[in-house]
Amino acid sequence: MERIPILQMGQFLIVTIQVDMHDRLALTLQDDLTSRISATNAKGVLIDISALEIVDSFIGRMLANISGMARILDAQTVVTGMQPAVAITLVELGLSLPGIKTALNVERGMQLLRAALGDRQADPEQDDVDAPVEA
Amino acid sequence: MPLSKRDLLPIRAETDIVMVRQAVRKACIEQGFSLVEQTKFVTAASEIARNTLEYGGGGEAALETHIEGVRKGVRIVFTDQGPGIADLEQAMRDGFTTGGGMGHGLGGAKRLVEHFEITSTPGVGTTVAIARWK
Ligand SMILES: Nc1ncnc2c1ncn2[C@@H]1O[C@H](COP(=O)(O)OP(=O)(O)OP(=O)(O)O)[C@@H](O)[C@H]1O
Ligand SMILES: [Mg+2]
Image (tube, each protein chain N blue to C red):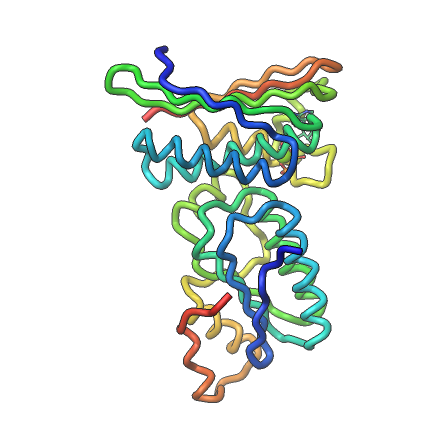
């Protein structure tokens, strides 16, 4: 079955969405992430959508669901790299994505997750997170 | 309005929604839409295509590109033979859903495009047309 890969980096799970997802693929990602969070005890989830050309209500709802379920499992979610045209469109569509944290890019997203963990003296080697995340 | 091209796209499965998005994107680029215009129009088309599949039980989309003098436009008409919508005003309202959605599809799509038309007859089906001119 077609799947979006989930990478683990320490206490964080990282997903880069690089395809125009059909609805079932989005739901599979939602389920996979939820089970990975509980299996790995991850404290943060970063979803990079910089390659996504649209976010419609279905994808928006998936992002909100992931963030909500992660919270129940005691993990923070941050969505990174939303294209400006996508953000403008989402607002007009009427989706405010309540409760979803966003960051400009993966690096800032990681900072946000670390800060949320209160992990101030992060391992310096782990700071190098702006390298492209392989899917 | 002189028509320059018309393609029929089936909407029978979830993957067809992706095909519709890609075909609409291509048409918008051909017509010289800006990135924001493309994104809004493609997103609106995606919402309506999903409704056609989810509530209309499937149907088809006729994607048209138009050239009228220096003006260029894209229009897409979604048709299904599903149960139809008894109360259109209610269906258009943000937050109204009979499915598991957030009820932003129809209202949101209308805000995202210049021209939005919906006709529906209970027991016969639903037609939604959206269009945008450059
Ligand atoms: N093609 C259709 N045939 C029959 N009913 C429809 C059709 N399109 C929309 N509806 C009805 O109108 C309601 C509102 O549609 P709308 O797209 O605004 O919201 P939704 O699909 O329920 O949720 P969302 O789009 O936010 O995920 C639907 O719940 C459904 O009852
Ligand atoms: Mg809808």
